[in-house]
Amino acid sequence: MQKRYLVTPGPTPVPPEVWRAMSGPMVHHRGPDFQEVLGRVLARLPAVFQTENDILFFASSGTGAMEAAVANLCSPGDRVLVASAGYFGERWAAIASAYRLEVEHLRYRWGELLQPDEVGERLDAAGDTRAVYVTHSETSTGVVNDVQAIAEQVAGRDGLLVVDAVSSLGAVPLETDAWGIDVVVSGSQKALMTPPGLALCSVSARAWELSTAALSPRYALDWGRAKSLAQTPAVTLVQGLDAAVDLLLARGLRAHHEHHLRLGRAARAGAKAMGLELFSPDDDRSAVVTAIRVPEGIDGVAVVRAMRDRSGVTAAGGQGELKGRIVRIGHIGYVDVWDVVAALAALELALVAAGAEVERGIATAAALDAFNEAVHA
Ligand SMILES: *Cc1c(COP(=O)(O)O)cnc(C)c1O
Image 1 (cartoon, rainbow, N blue to C red):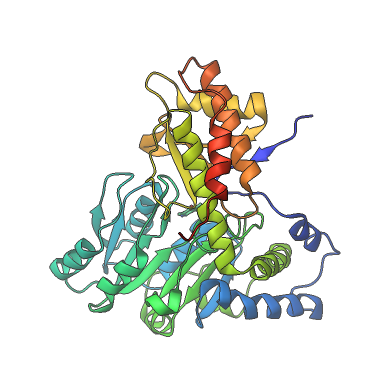
Image 2 (image 1 turned 90 degrees about the horizontal axis):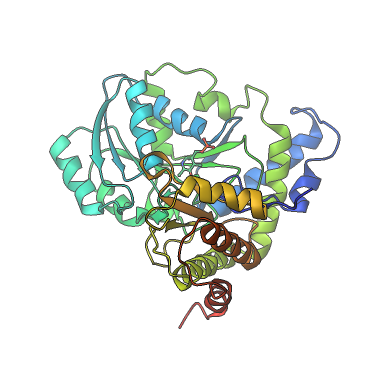
């Protein structure tokens, strides 16, 4: 038996309180037991989304709610703008293409930041655009985009703003209403500290209105059906999420964000101390996942495997074109600095075993020091 540490950017570790909430007898989704839980979680989720908009559940992975945000807003042939700089941004373009939309794709190199002014320029050039799809935290690269600035660009033009916040909701600041975001999509298994299988989506009045005219075929992913709970919801996961939201709001959303910021500092300081180069920006915005370059000549896939097999630490490798080139340490949700320290120590061991030249024994001290620094100077 080997103790396991999960330091991926999703799924993330699940707190015991959440497991406990999911371990009672099975209840019926129309009965009073579940209605009480549902009422409570729906009353408190707006504080997490920072919105007064409706919040819908889907019994699916986060991608299901992404697909719903295309199917419910658009008709075949509609023009949409996708701005992407990584694996998950590309997913918006793939879904939009699958729905036969005309995709205007503002594509950046993986690891770059989306440029808000260029989103505005592209919207002007394209004309008549139904919706703009962007990724808040691009989990494949560690970049957290300036969604507020993007929203300012979209606000003065036509088109709704749809944000993939699967790995950012609860992790870093996201002000749905104050920033003017129409649709925010998220998932249970990242900063929301709940097992995978429950997707969430907030929908503005303007988006609801547009959805009534959208002709893309849909049934199980129809927003109206989701709102009326026409299908059996993921009862157990909603129970878990209720407990997770409890924990999150008890600590306070802002304190939760600050915790992730400090964990990001710890991960970056540790990686740099052992002589590694960061792939994700060396910046406090990068508080969701830290992407570290694997030294030249070392196979990143083998490093991630060795971390798991030798040390019981499951980190994430690179996706798509970054496969084998980076190691990603996730630090959102029910994660503390000791998880980050374990991840750094396991990474160090795996790299040494692979023949890389790393400075031994100083990463964890650097991480702890960075974590303990005051956030506000
Ligand atoms: C994890 C993730 C998704 C996909 O979520 P699934 O639950 O795997 O479908 C989408 N976007 C981002 C930014 C993510 O981090």
